[in-house]
Amino acid sequence: MTITIIGAGYVGLTTSALLAVAGHKVYCLDIDEEKIKIIKSGKSHFYEPGLDSFVKKVIDSGNLIPTLSYADSIPESEIVIISVGTPQNDKGEFNLTYVFDSASKVIEQVSGSKLVLVQKSTVPVGTGKKITSMAKSAGKDIDVLSCPEFLAESTAVLDTLNMDRFVIGGESNDAKSKVIELFEGLDDFSKTVDYTKLAEFQSIYNTEFKTYNKIPFKDRVISVGIESAELIKVTANAYLSTKISFANSIARIAEGVGADITEVMDGIGADRRIGRSFLYAGLGWGGGCFPKDTAGLVAIADDIGFDFELLKAVRNINFSQVDYVVDRVKSILGGLENKSIAILGLSFKPGTSDVRESPAIKLAKAFTNAGSQVSTYDPEATNEAKKILKDDVIYASSVEEIATNSDFMILATEWPEFVSADYEMLGKLMKQKNIFDARNALNRIELEDIGFKYYGIGR
Ligand code: UGA
Image (cartoon, rainbow, N blue to C red):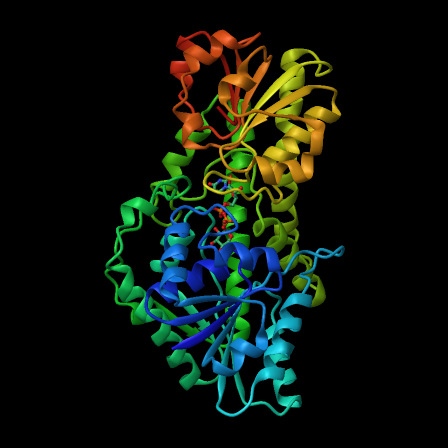
């Protein structure tokens, strides 16, 4: 098939590269010239484990065609997938400018045979129907479907190749069959891929490891109405966010009563009805999705006159985690003025260079605002962090560098290289051997044995 995917971000570029590897001709369209230039050179413009090798392969084979042009790509395509950003606006709602702009440019270019337009961006309920009306008023023959995306950054390739479920919403069964066929082919192709190379980060928050999915793809398809598909996407993210804020709340109680949050969550997570995944207490959730999607769902609820108090509380709990850590460090050190704070990690989670809404960045800001000297190190996210933190902090190129003469070391993002670092050696470089494990990823007993004062979340 020939298809066009609009938006070359985490979802768009990963899906484009993999559908191209599976044998399709794929136009990957973006309005950002710089991004298209980088993709043309055979690379991704962001760090995502395993993605570069696929991009290189399909650029070399010619199956992936990065483009800025709707006129070159849309008339040739049987299926067009929209996967552009929907950033949050001032009112907390989804900004749909890019979705509607790209939909109207697609509609403009359609002529002749019927086009299937798949909406993959995260949007409020009703967006698909609005695009259908736009096409109808322009007199164009287009089937609009909603096909939400569930891939997570750092495991984007693995998640795209091996989906737990494939949700597809819309009216036309013919259009649905065509799209299911496209992704079923990708699932067949996935059986030829070596997963172990892509699995580095999959165990961070998940206890159910992905292997080749033995359930036939067709049995994983969830075919629903377009509004349900749109609501499934934001609801999934709201639910996962709720699990994490719930764990962070119990962590406060655990700390107050002398329990250990990790032991408590292991104890409840073993109940299959609850599950252990996404119950890891820490610095809170960040990234380009949970903060925006929870705000978006609160706004959707407001629109229909429902006050979604539960989700508002989930958000407040989340955004108080950083202050909680800063306050604890302040009381331990007896003030933060002129203290040297070493922050390990800047990305919103390990395995990505993405710093959008990163708790680590918020932590760095809070300490600099309180008069501390902050030094940071991240294996992949430093360039992105510089755009936000400017010259307010020191950017180092190793853990040793930031440990030197520091009063407190804080694990903000649990990159594997931080978890396995040589803390005995690092402790010798520090002014005071204080460590705050704000992701509960380190071995408390080992650290205390080598003389560290260890602090964690809820333990
Ligand atoms: C999330 C969802 O997991 C994807 O299914 C969804 O497709 C994506 O949003 C999206 O809407 O595009 P992502 O934001 O890439 O994916 O990252 P997650 O792995 O979900 O982590 C989100 C945040 O929660 C991170 O800051 C992470 O550190 C934090 N987290 C996660 C915890 O603090 N504890 C946990 O147990 C799990």
